[in-house]
Image 1 (spheres, rainbow, N blue to C red):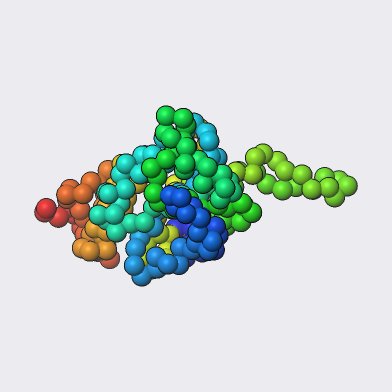
Image 2 (cartoon, rainbow, N blue to C red; image 1 turned 180 degrees about the horizontal axis):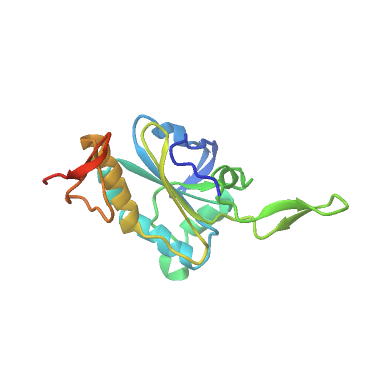
Length: 208
């Protein structure tokens, strides 16, 4: 698994769906210099754990907007699958009401660049191409800053849902560091004491 933290986020141009609209050339480059981005990957449309996450991101979208963060989802499904799922009511297993972009990584290149693609191509002794595992994405999440750098990443196996609270906590920690130059210790929450770093190490807790 690649560690992308501290490196430029892999950019891409792909089809995406937002609400009822199919976007032909969606790119993260539109956010550089303007917004932070939470880019999250999920395995498949029309499944069980995935809609709980997508609905939860939508429920908390105001918290992300307050922090100047764009939320972007991505899976290896087509834009037509995304569109159909977005038009399906929640009580029928759909994600109607989700209004942030869902990227269609149909060619698997985005998942591969972010190193969250579960399956892999192999060749047998006769040179025939085959696949080990399913060519779908793990539950990867990447926090990208306004300069386009990855500052945080977490990758869960497919049965394991993520935590919105932890995602927001890490965003708060990054923004606190950027604003105050203070580092955030274990389990730091917005409003808690932070710490100041020196050449000799961390000098201690600061007053609120």
